[in-house]
Length: 86
Image (cartoon, rainbow, N blue to C red; front, top):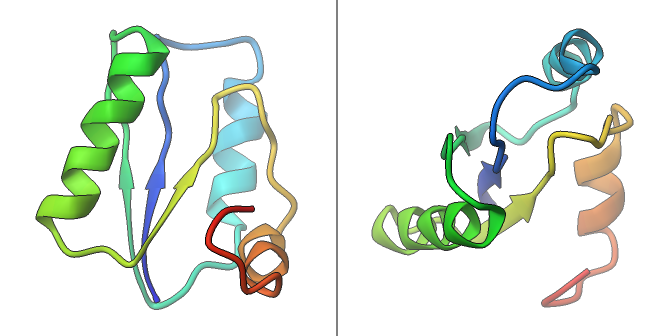
């Protein structure tokens, strides 16, 4: 799995410190990157991340908004569904 984690954000939010800690402890696959388009409306930021995914041959994209604190095993739990969209 080559994963791009797309994190559209318009700037800092009140939960920024907790979000950084959650991201730092997230179990990730070996081949991954993060896309953080900043200062764009969410729909444009998501489109920008999709273009990046396609250009760099990622197999999966995970959109995680800046108001979500992921559990450590989130990627593993989502990938267990073995579906195109979860």
